[in-house]
Length: 254
Image (tube, rainbow, N blue to C red; front, side, top):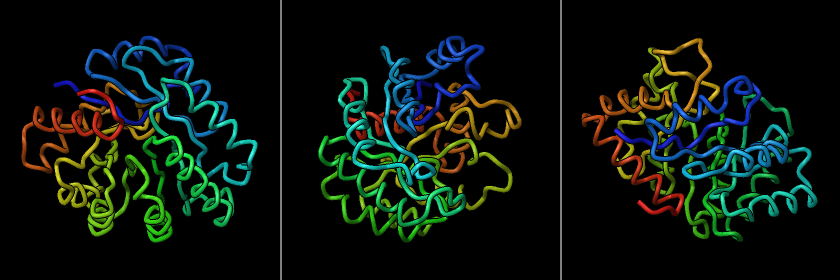
């Protein structure tokens, strides 16, 4: 069962003691993975990890939206020019932790979607308790984006349906496996197989079997098994389909 972790943060300091061992374990079970940047410094740190089967996304998280100006966007464009960068993000809106004002978040989100359109890279979207505003901004840009991923999906089935209809891919992380996450499993049940993705968001959100541990990319296989149960298909089918979907949205060969 060969999988893809479409979203992890291997440059995080939590991996400093054993990063190469974590990566080796990951590549034993993964076809490839994407290391996600959420500010300029760790987007550049992600590039330092790029190699065969290890790709990068460069972005500015909504937490940092107040600091997104023309200079930051120019610097992001420069990072995104590296051939290992296959997406823009994570970017988006976070109304649960309003570390930046909503107006600043919206401006930074729109600017990064515009950059993704300009560079013809897919966008990786962080959306937390901001469904309507996220949808409205995405709707403005979706026709020019080569792809869009709602990462670590946390909303309900109705919103998943709307985003799929808009043209988005829906990515599920380890919280899909939590006993109290029935809303997420209900949402996953409605998403067509050809729009599903898997991720870990490592070092965060370890699946239930590893709850309380530092999450790592190899753990994506546990989420894959739960997603297979939700969809009523085999884990092998989930692996094949989500890997095909990841290749499609990121523009990589199958």
